[in-house]
Image (cartoon, rainbow, N blue to C red; front, side, top):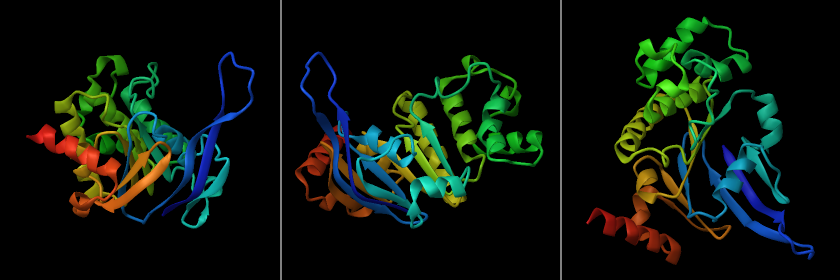
Amino acid sequence: MLEVKSVYKSYSKTGISFRRGRVPVLDDVSFQINTGEWAALVGESGSGKSTLSRLVLGLEKADSGSLLLEGKDAAVWMKENRGQMSVVFQDYITSANPAFKVKDIIHESWKTAGGNKSIHETVESLMRKVGLPLEIKNRYPHELSGGQLQRVCIARAISTSPRFLVLDEAVSSLDVPVQAQILQLLHQLKAELDLTCLFIAHDLQTVAYLCDQIIFLNDGKIVEQIETKYLANAQSAYAKRLLEAVIRFKV
């Protein structure tokens, strides 16, 4: 479904220095996610995860290399398949228009993609799917809990029946009990929907529960890509360090 080939990305230096130059962020990044697979991109802050997310979503362009979706350039694929890529962001507060009611937020992407079913039926069906009570559909974002608002954002993301979903730190800003609830919801959606997913996160324990494979990104480079069921056999020093931290946490 998604193939990232030899991607390089850098940014111009900022600050008071007059020296010209660029700061490398992604260095020869390559990986592949097969159709129907859920893959986690794991890395600490500053590893390049957010930059790679923006490239996959088409918000920025790589300096070199290619991003392909079903064998086509990602930008071309997205134009030809409107609404077939969706995203759930970390900051559920700013990603929901505060002037919109819940029903309008959920309906937003579906309407943009050209949906023609009954608005009322579509919104209520999506709310049930993500475990939201129908009585909140006329409430505003500030009237919801964090967990409820993130469920609204998930409902919006799946409203277009996308084939590719990006979860960009989608649970990291939630309290731990709410994280568990949202992960259970995502696990349910994984079983029910025909989705390929890239789950970007810094918490290995979170994504190991949900994803089929883990891609480790460190200092802008892929240091290891491994199936989750073989995670204990990870070879890179970076992956081993993250695994050791999870084990200590469990103990």
